[in-house]
Image (cartoon, rainbow, N blue to C red; front, side, top):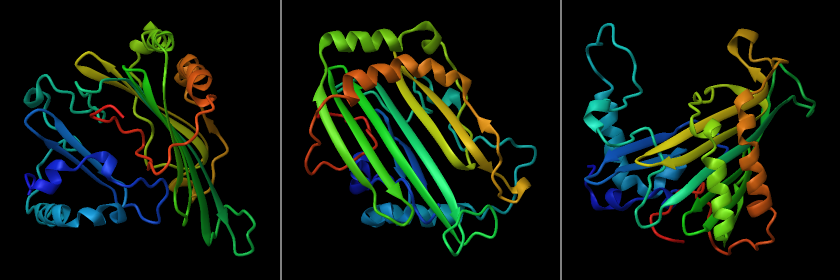
Length: 285
């Protein structure tokens, strides 16, 4: 099933992007190929439909595997990650692979999200809700060693289609050197930041996901700042506290550089180019 032609050739940029969905039905695949890990993310069942011939047999196989008769006692969940000794020399945790034909310098994804619970008359209410108005705005960028970069700005509201623009251009050698200097700052290079909190619904928040190639491995940093988290303990009502990720301030030089050198450039959006979440391309764009 894993070696069928269609699945072997599938890449992340062929999978449509969705920021907001009516369902939580995500499928993640990591397949060990002879020279790399093939990693695919399908955010919803709808994004899997074009590839049903390849994926349906895997889904049915997984359903059979889940029906295990005996549970392993005293076992610690590992999110089904391969043992480190079985993957010597490879960075399984990295979801952004370095391509020898098109090496990249950095990739960053910033999501701003907001949710509002509405009553029947449209007034905000923390309880007895009949609808949730959710919106996500995503800005992502990937910069390659050649100086080429890809910037995407996407937006989607609950129940609506995603709207996105793609911008592509080149940086000068001086700009690349300045970026590399920022990425190699000791306080950023030596940072081991924990994964952002998952499974929390918030009224408003921002998450940042940063990938930086470091030799044979990829440094991944995740930050989350949010207000009004909803938890079962409060009956899914908003908390009033603000969770500020203190170490996110280490990204200020990088955010400033991106604003001045990429975001503020008057580059027209590319025509007929769909967003890909700035997935690293294996060949120059």
